[in-house]
Image (tube, rainbow, N blue to C red; front, side, top):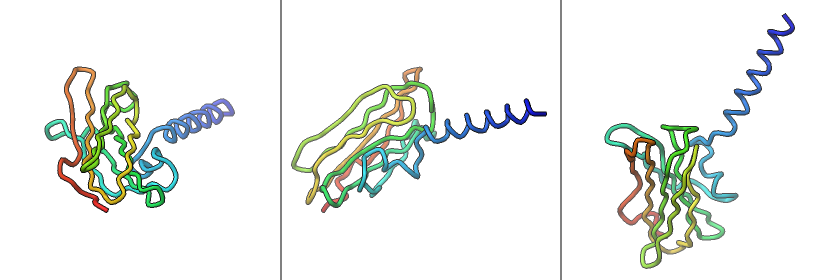
Length: 140
């Protein structure tokens, strides 16, 4: 009986530790740092299947935007991701990397400017999902 209780406790602890290590939509803004709040988001699609969500966050104190993508498909599997952020009348910023849970963050000073953002997730097979906003928005 004691062995079963210890085994169950160990599995519960392992499951809890695993859950806290995986990013979720509820804490996507945390990956950009203190003071960032989600201001826009978009699903990352491969045709009709959602592979993740790309988040645009903003920090009122610094005037910076930040973009991250959180995977909902191929979670835990290393896959290629790309995250980009473009400031109207300014520069574009991007990051390509192989990740297990989320891609980014990418930062840009955007106070008083509009932004576009996007993300891609590539499956091990080479298929790709994309999402974001291709029109200028979140101006200010």
